[in-house]
Image (tube, rainbow, N blue to C red):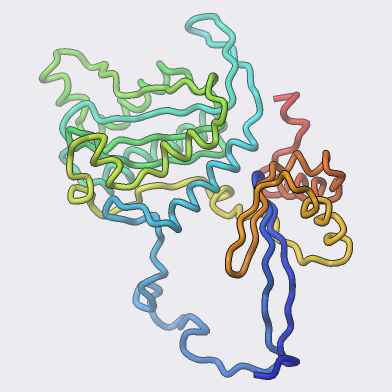
Length: 319
């Protein structure tokens, strides 16, 4: 193909903690379609490709692609988490927090397939969090405990009182009789099946949560001493709300105006970079764009956060 047939379009993708530049290469020649260029609507989707299945379905392993997706979801939920103050009725105290990081467990031996626990219990819990606590953004991860039971780590953007959370989760899992079986052994019906992790003193909350939530099966096996990979059954091993799932960063074509704004970033030698084969990443917090004088880029990305997730800087002060 002749060089003059190619059209090179430079792009920039802005995320909360990085800026990535790359180029799209197009040809102005008409291209003959082959069977890989479209999806046949006459056949069921699951029969058409092997790679169309979600990366969130796994036998316990987490692919590089899945780790990138869950890391990005965590990056955005941390970025948009405003400092909040909530009055707790039980203790009478005022609690300050940004995110709720919780763990849900089964109080008796698991007797159902993983996908049953996820569909019947976890989904019901998340639905109630949305209904009763106005939870908008969440990320969850399924892991295997040393005893073989499935448990869940969940990040929520709203405060849920620990006693209400425990009561809700116990009621939900008892639809599958997990609390009843616990009672037969321990003679009471209030198992401590939930835990809230304190994150207030953690300096790099994003890095902490990513490390915690993006562990692969080998890491779980080392920590629990059990063969996690063999025990995992079919089903999703992580998920997030629709808005976070569709948040992939602000993608713009680099015109003369954007190029002028980016130059202020490129010229700063203190910014850590990574050179890929077809892209380059600049690791920079989007707030630093204003400090570098790239106020237009800051405005564009702030608008993106508002349009995508309903977040604005002002919410940090009024939440």
